[in-house]
Every structure is written in C-alpha cells, then in structure tokens.
Image 1: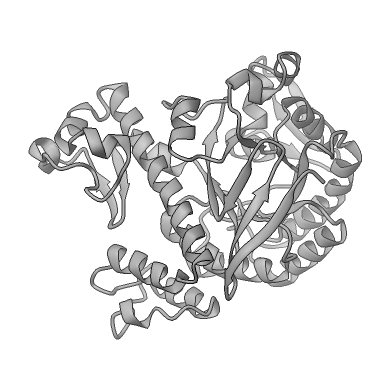
Image 2 (image 1 turned 90 degrees about the horizontal axis):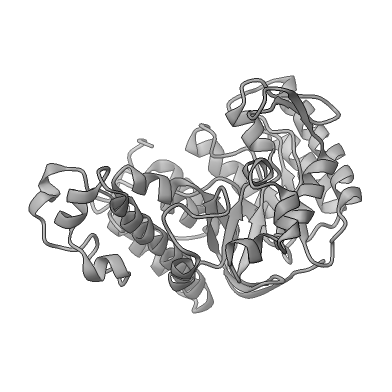
Length: 398
C-alpha cells in the first residue's frame, strides 16, 4: 500500500483528512479535474499548482491510444511526461469504451471494442488495463469494472456487480507496482441496496488501499443518488479514502462530503467553461448573455482568482465561444472555484464549523430557501441541521 489516510477532523459522517500519496500530501475532501489526454484543457501545470490542484485525473483509454502507454513509460511516466509534480489518478478505460463506443461488448474475458484507429476488434482485459496503468505510473489506479448505466435495471445490474468482484481479483494479481501505486476497487450494484451491499463487502474483504463508488452521475434521480452514496460510505472502512466517481456539481460535492465521501472527479467545471458558463456561489453565471456585454464587475467579486482580479464580465463576454482565451479564463476561474470549495470543506470540518459552512453555502445558492427536497433529506441523514436556511415548506422540485 502506497498511501496513508489520516483523519484530522469530523462532523458526524463528514471527515477531513490528510491523504499521503507518493507524489503529494493531499487534503480531503478534494475535487480532481479531468485531464483526458494528459492535459487539463487550456491550463498549464503551473496554473494548476497555482490554483491549488492536488490530484489530476488521466484517462487510460485516451492515453493508451495516443501517445501510448509504452511511450509514456519510456519517457519516465506521465508525471515527468506532462511535467506535473503532484498526485495523479488514472481510470481503467472501461467507462470510455462503454460511453464512446457503441460497439463495445462486455464478456467475462474483458471489453471488446472496435479500434477507433483502424476499426479492428480489440480486447481490454482487467490484466491489460492494470499493465497500461502500471506503465503510466499514476499514484492511484482504478480496477477495470463492468460498467452499466444506473438507469438500467434487471439481471444485467447483478451480472455486472458479480463480474466486477471477479475482475478485482484479476486486477490485484496483475498489479506489479503495489508499493508505488494504489489500486482502488469500484463499488457497483446500480440502485439496488442489496447488490451494493454485497459489492461493498466483497471489496472490503480484499483490503484495498481505497474504494470508489461507481455507476452514479449517469442520469439517475437525485434521491436515488444520495441514498446510494449514504449507504456505501456508511459501510466502507473509516481509515480508507472514499471516491465518488463522476461527481462535479458543487451542490452534490457538499452533500456527498456531509455523507462521508472524500474524493470527486468530473469534466463539468471545464466543460461548462467552454460553453461560456462560470461557477459562482449563487449557482451559474452565463457569460454569453447580452446583459454581460457592458458589465464591468468581475465574474465573482468575492473570488480571489487571477481572472476575477484582472478581467470584467464584459471582457469575457466578448471572448466567450469566439476566442480560445475565453474558455481558458473561465476554466481557470471554475477550477479555482472547485479548489476553493475543497479547501473550505476541509477547513470547516477541521475547525468544527461544518454545519455553518453548509448553511452559508445553501443560503447563497437558494436565497429564497427553496432547497431541493433531496438535499434536505440527505442533510437529515448526515445529521446537519439546515432548518435555518430552508423555507417552511421545502419544494419537491429537483
């Protein structure tokens, strides 16, 4: 095991910790930006350090296609290749196959898909996924799991969960660098509490360095989403990191952190930036709107980032979707917002003022007190009293 997880503070289920990885000591809760091809679109590694980014995520599938894991290995690993001194996590490649390739076929052997290069059938096995990730060299590597969208029901969900457990053993056996790279298992089981429970227990029995909650953020309703997170975090070990995959909305991160999760990743902050949208405490600010054309305020007057210190809404409005600089500035601001959110979660838990932080966050986002019912339900389970920022009758709107 190449990590240490030390809890520094708690509030009921929420926890703040030091996660010591081979390349960096991280503070949780934390958000990980996604750098598909070994780059966070539009930002340099220096800028990522400057905004306080601790771990970035690389996509195994894309990196294996180009520049190839063999070349990355030859050139000293992905850290050196992209000049990133801090921590890194790679996914297994399975999700891309299923989401990008309509012709992916999953069998017991692995995932068969058509090569996007020459159209020939290719097979990604659990063993090969781990070999590729061993060559890339990230601090945290993910097991290949059988990915099913949450909205699917029936026997396919059960099949995928049991296969994920069989494949974890193949991943463990194939993992050649356990003292330098941490293999995380992924809890599957759809929205079925019984299947999720079997999967959690099976993975915990394998005593892995950390655990991810997979198969969410795929279109399920928010009530089902938070209940799966709550069930899994309650059953996973106290002394290991818990990673909810694919979660990037600030509200979801606050709710999941209250329920005891530690790590998140998503393309959302940078993708929404490329569409001209900024993340602000009130929710979203659409810079494309005509009202922005002569607005001389910064994106967020309370934000300390380089973009908010130097540029007006009017300037960014004039660039957005026309010039690459627009999406670069918005990506910088949005990731700064996510890093600041992570820091605030961490410090408020450590300093024993987490409920105040949550109420403050919700008051800014829902000034009328119309906090969605699912958030109220989740906070009740998390033991956080948000009655002071709720309207008397919370609306059932999602």
